[in-house]
Length: 478
Image (cartoon, rainbow, N blue to C red):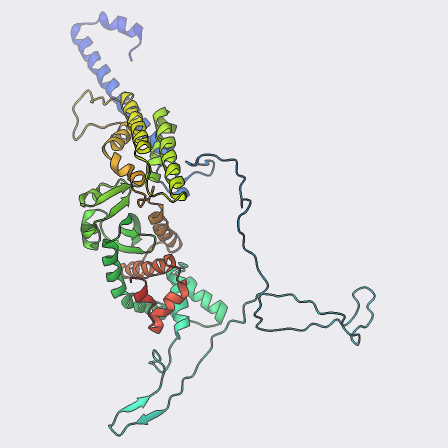
C-alpha cells in the first residue's frame, strides 16, 4: 500500500493525477493478491508428502519423516512376544553325506588317524548343487504302421531338433515378469550361473508364447471379475515408448488383472470391459470416471486419511484430526466385531457413529464457508482444499462409510495398490517399455502370476504349467 506521506501529497495533486495514481494502486494491489495466491499454492505443494497425499514415498525429501496415520502403541519395534518365527531346521531327508576324519590333534599335533572315533556328530548344510546347463538327448523309435502312418515316441513339447526345456523357459519368464529383470540382466544371469549365452530373441519368444497361451485365461478372468461381490480398481501411469500410457488393474483377494491403455478414464474402462458389466461394490479412490458406472461404490479411506492429514498439518483445523480419529475408531470397532464372529454392528452403534460423522462435517463447514471471488472469473469459482474435502465427505458419506455398514467391503483399496505397486518398480528398473506389445505381454503374464500367488500356487510351478500343458491355468479361474 502507498505510505501515509505519499497519500498526503496525493490529496494535494490535481484530480486527474489522483485518479491515475489510484488506478496504479489498484493494479498494484491486484498483482500482490495474485502473487499471494500463487505463493500459497506452491507452499501447499511443498507441504505434501507420502503421508498426507497420494505422492509416492520415493518423492519424500531425505530430511522428512512422514507421520503415520496409525495411532501410537506401547509395542516395541520388531517381532512381538508370541510371534511365530522361522528358522533353518534339521532335515530328515539328506541328499549327500560327507565323512570327515580327524587326522591330528589341534593342540599338540599328535597323529590321531589310527584312533577309533568315540562318537559321530552331525551338522547339516543347505547348499545349492553346481549349476550347469544339462543337455538331454531324446531318442525315439520310428515305426511305420501298415496303414502308412509313421509313429514316433518323442515326449509332448519336444518338437524341434534343438530347443530349450520347460524348466529353463519357465525360469526365464519368472525372472523377467515376476522378479522384473530386463533382457540384458537376464542374459547376464544365465551367463554367470550356467555359462550359457542366450539370445534376446529367445527370451522374447518365451514371453510371447506365455502371452498367447494365456489369452483364454484372460477372458475367463475378466468374466469372473464382473460377478465378484467386491473388487478394487486402480490405475497408474506407465512409460511406453517414451510416452505416458496407463496401467489399469482390478483386484480381489483371489485374482488380479492388468491392462494397458492409452487413456486413464471411462473410455479405457469401457474398452477393458469389466466395469460396464460389474454389479458388485467397486473400491477405488476419488477418481470421478468410476462414478459413471452403475454399481455400488466404496471410497478408499487410506486416501481420505492422507487428505485429512494434509488439512490438519497445512491448515491447522481440528475437525480433520477428529475425523481421522473417528474413521480409525470405526475400523477398530468393525475388526473387533469380526473377531467375535459378528457380521454387522448394532443399529445403535451405527447411529452413534453416523451422528458423530455428520457433526464433524457440519463443524468443518462452519469454519470453511464458501467465499465467492470479488471479480467474476472463467469456470467454477475456486474453493479451498478444506472446503473441497468437506463437500466430498458430505456428498459421498455412503461410499466412505460403506465398510462400516457392509463387512464384505474393505476400509481401503490397499490390496489393489499392492498389486499395482510392483509395476512402478519394473519401470524404475527398466526405464520404460520399448513397445506396446512388450507392455501388454507383461500385463497379461503378471495377471496370471499374481492370481496364482493369491491362490497359494507356487509361481514357478504355475509358469511351468504353461509349457507342460497341465490344468493349473484352468484351475485359477474355476
